[in-house]
Length: 189
Image (cartoon, rainbow, N blue to C red; front, side, top):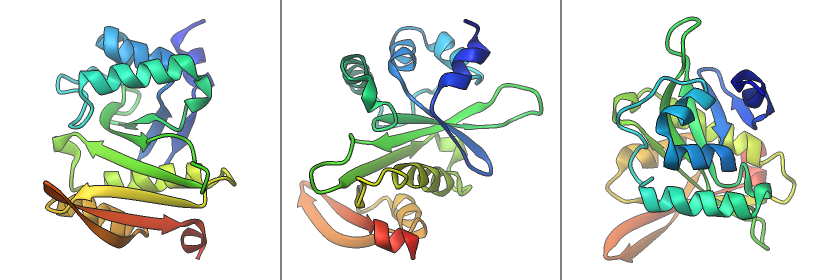
């Protein structure tokens, strides 16, 4: 099977400027073991500073084990955010994000995201979060989404606010964090 055929089989979400690709077990393995093959498999140019912050090697290995054990987790774990760069050329991997698992017994999921430094402050994180929310709310089990970010990360907080989230709690656990929530009904309104 050629790379193009594999790409067509992958779970993807298209936004105006981005292509979001869900990390499956194969992509997770390539991201850990063969970074050039990972970029080739997603149709992107190789990025020297990959992955973005908060996606260290142990987290990538953990995600690989989860996806190998339970392929139904695809879409509920990680996504890579790709942006077209040159007409007809490979995309650029501009960030990552996703959920910390499928909906729990109350219908809640948690979202997270990280952008490569040179692609911040362009509205791309807000666009990616919107695409992920659109995908997640297609699942009737999802009733609400939470996000937790460090209080001093004002750009991250602004992404959540622009995406419809409401600040609901300040958490002090060594470093101050802020929780945001978005209910299905509020997203539809």
